[in-house]
Structure formats: C-alpha cells, structure tokens
Length: 219
Ligand SMILES: CCCCCCCCCC(=O)SCCNC(=O)CCNC(=O)[C@H](O)C(C)(C)COP(=O)(O)OP(=O)(O)OC[C@H]1O[C@@H](n2cnc3c(N)ncnc32)[C@H](O)[C@@H]1OP(=O)(O)O
Image 1 (cartoon, rainbow, N blue to C red):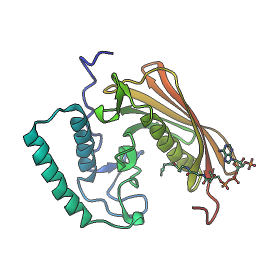
Image 2: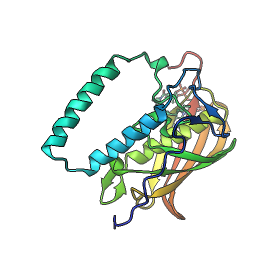
Image 3: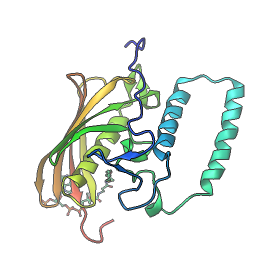
Image 4: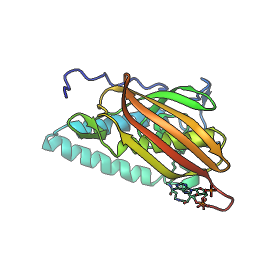
C-alpha cells in the first residue's frame, strides 16, 4: 500500500468553540460543566502529537526535552484532577471522539433519529501495520458511535451487550473514511444497531451491536 500522497490532516471543525450537531455553539458539557476556551484545540493538538510521535524517530535531544516537558505537564494536570462526574474528557458529546483520546475522532455530518453519517481520519497513532488501521481501533470507533446513538435514539444510560465486527477489506490510515450508523430495531430495553466504515464505496468493516438500557440502580 502506498503512502506517497495521504489525505492531508483534516482541519479541526470547531477550533475555538464546541459546535452542537444542529450548528449552535456551546461552552458547556451535556451536564452543564463549563469547558475552558480552547479545550477542543488542546485535544486536537494532543491527537496530532500522538500521530507525530508514532511517525517519528526522534534524536536524543528531542527525546530528552519531550520527556522533561511531558513530566512537567503531568505534574500540572495532576494538580487539576477532579472526580469522574466532573471530568471533561469523554463527556463532550459535541467534540469528535468526545475529547477522549483513545476514541477515534468521528466528525458527524448528518444525524437524524434513526441514523447518522460522518467521517473519520485515522492518523499514525492508529496504525496496525502496512498502512492499515489497527484492528482494535475499529471496534472502539463502533462501540462509541453506536453507543452514543443508542442514547441519542431514545435510550437512557446504556451498555454494550455485544458488538460484532466484520472486517471486509483493509481500512487505510491517513485517508478520509466514511462512517454510518443506524438503529435496526428497538425491543424494550434492547437497541439493535448497525454501523459501516467505508473507503469511498468500498466497505472496510461493518458492525452489529446490541445495547441495553440500564435498569435503575444498574452500574
Ligand atoms: C453520550 C455518551 C456516549 C457514550 C458512548 C460510549 C458507549 C460505550 C458503551 C460501553 O462500552 S459499555 C462497556 C462494555 N459493556 C459492558 O461492560 C456490559 C457488561 N454487561 C452487563 O453489564 C450486562 O450483561 C448487561 C447490562 C449488558 C445486560 O444485563 P441485564 O441484567 O441488564 O440484562 P439481562 O441479562 O436481563 O438481559 C436482558 C435481555 O437482553 C438480552 N441479552 C443480554 N445480553 C445479551 C447478549 N450478550 N447477547 C444477546 N442478548 C443479550 C437477554 O437475552 C434479555 O433478552 P429478553 O429480554 O428478550 O429475554
């Protein structure tokens, strides 16, 4: 597989603010926590850093200075640690990947009650080998996207009961890929969802999943 002319790194969609799927702008998480200005830029920057680190063979000087800078940042972030209900990472539904760095950053283009479509660009951080996205990153993408959709589609808090992924053809890194998700059917607490990952018209992977709305008191 050639890496001669990868898709250029996509521009951040919402550089300074958090944009809801209806186009309006917010500076708060879904449960009302204020998000500092520039937070999504910071997340984009760290995502890029992970890609740059994965792609580089740094000299000893850069290794040493990076180790020092990261240690300093770790100390500074440790001073601002909060309990889980107050954290921002993973709770920003309006930011691609919910600002959770392990989750691939899916950009939602269209969303309705029964389905959505969007796009995703996997950088070198998500490389499996030979120009292909890591096989573990794809279930992560589907779990997050379908799980979010189980909630948006009418479920309250839900958990994955099963997630089945078929890898139909390789998914290239550094390429804009399309993703779709739709609700297949709902039976009481059970939400059956399907998703696809495509390179142009070529199907790379498809997923079927069951999410169960949690009962009162269920963790
Ligand atoms: C906006 C935020 C966006 C967030 C997106 C991120 C989403 C990420 C979601 C996750 O990754 S959650 C973490 C991974 N999942 C887990 O850790 C779940 C672990 N398993 C459980 O906690 C329980 O097994 C579970 C809640 C899924 C189900 O337990 P329950 O006690 O609620 O259900 P129960 O066993 O009574 O089954 C209810 C129905 O579901 C069916 N069922 C349960 N598990 C099934 C299964 N695996 N396959 C097929 N059917 C299943 C079961 O047969 C039954 O069908 P019927 O009502 O028709 O009889």
